[in-house]
Amino acid sequence: MAAGQRAFEFFLRDARPALARTHGPEMADEIISATRVEYERVRPQVPDIGGIGNVFQPVMTVNGWIVALHRAMGGHGFAAKDAVRVCHEVFDGFFRRIPGWLLRGIGGFLLSPAGRWYFERQARRSQQRIYPEDFVWHVERDASGELSMIFDECAVNKWYVAQDVRELAPYCNFADVTYSRLMGMGIDASETLGLGCGQCALRFKRGRKTLVPKNLDGIVADDSPGTF
Image (cartoon, rainbow, N blue to C red; front, side, top):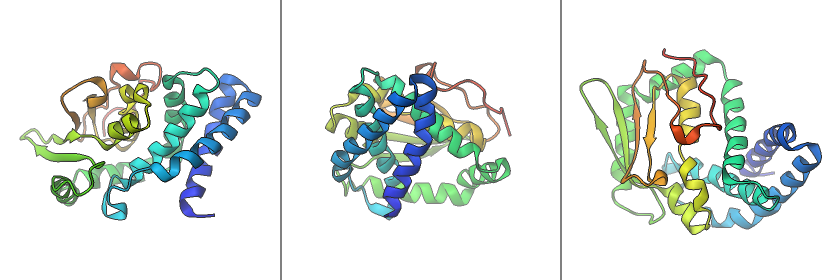
């Protein structure tokens, strides 16, 4: 089994108990089976935005899983928010299995000068618009230590439009909140294209508590570990 398919099966493995707790084991099994079918349809359509050379390529792979799960759940009468709630539980559980010291170390590195250099390099490449379905973004920094990734174009939202699942767009920032609060990255992810804003802004500040935006009420519990 290829690595990508293995990762998808791990995603389903963790999604099943989340589904079973809310909807019962029989419904969970039906949804898991339908998600596999939907993913076979979706997988060839997941856009290539630069492969391993683009830090956000895995984001698109994961959003293929999200679209497949959403469609499978939608076939049983569930809303986009229900699918996103399951996905949050899966990703939150994944991150919580990693030692806290390691997560905080990763978060610190990503906001370090070396991390900023890497992101700025990636951002400059995105502005060449080599891949039409890619993100287009730049990096901003201010005197307070806040580092912001500003997206004029969002590959995730383009993907949702292409797949006719615009109902997922208001929740496109859930994973950013999930990793930030465990990595101590202090994100403010309240401004997104999916919410109708003029841009997406991921604003990070080490030592600041990650707050849960209102659009994620009922999806992400406000139980952030706080500041680091």
